[in-house]
Image (cartoon, rainbow, N blue to C red):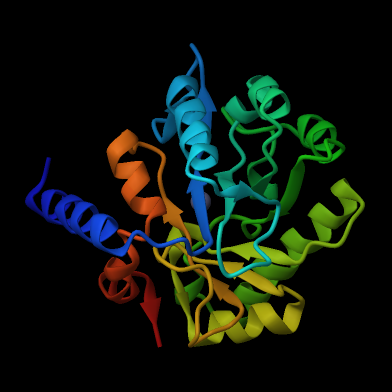
Length: 244
Ligand SMILES: [Zn+2]
């Protein structure tokens, strides 16, 4: 474990204990797996199930979309790996509403969902399909033309596949800028999901939602994140992910 990770873990544990917050939070994963692994970012099923149990035991409600300042948890999965399709039973059995952020140009590639699998998933009332751009480029670093095509192509393609309006965007690698926020808003993305940890609502950019990556957290770390232990890391991550 690196020194930075150790320092971050200690901050999360101390502040989680001190804050004991009930603020609503968005959390995210990349995939879930039982035996077959589709990405090294995948969470083992047992760990995922443990997380869900903790959320509910702590009295949070898992919702498709956060509408209240307190007591709600929103869960998303980035990139569209096959594990979530193969392990959909756990989502159905535990009745967990989730959002999948999909990259249309990756559909059908090794380890990624096929278009047919996505169509099946989109018919599940627990699953909300949204956009992770057309080809997963760093949006903060593109010409205006390419930025617009990344944002609008994925929206159009997913609207066609899922037969519904696509209104949420997730930034690839978490990277964004003021220009990305305004162009995405213009194109019709009402909610934009970042990788900045902490409280869901963002006072600087109301469209930009904060999310905490929880895919490998043990029970203790996970509890402290739910209690707001990572709210204080926001400054650190803003420097990493945001350019003016
Ligand atoms: Zn991604």
